[in-house]
Image 1 (tube, rainbow, N blue to C red):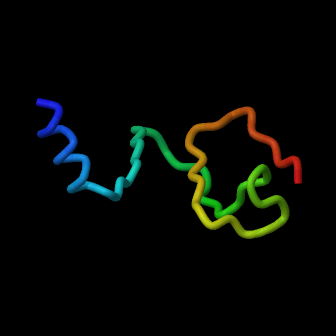
Image 2 (image 1 turned 135 degrees about the horizontal axis):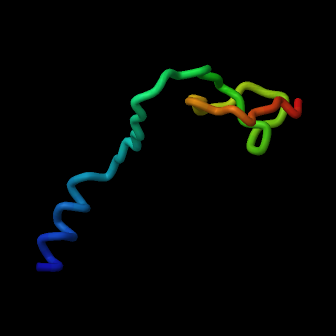
Image 3 (image 1 turned 90 degrees about the vertical axis):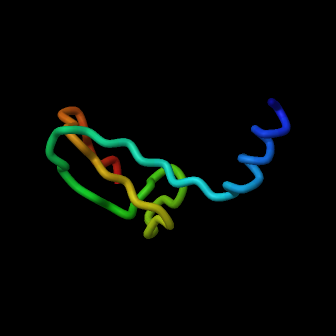
Length: 57
């Protein structure tokens, strides 16, 4: 059983994460003030349905 699991893991070296919500999207931004403050981020954040969001930058 474990051998089959490890074989499947070896065949899938890349993973894409996706989380879907049934509400409207507020914004899609390439910024991350914690990882790359004041710069364009190498990844994308989608803000969906937030009501307590402020821009500290």
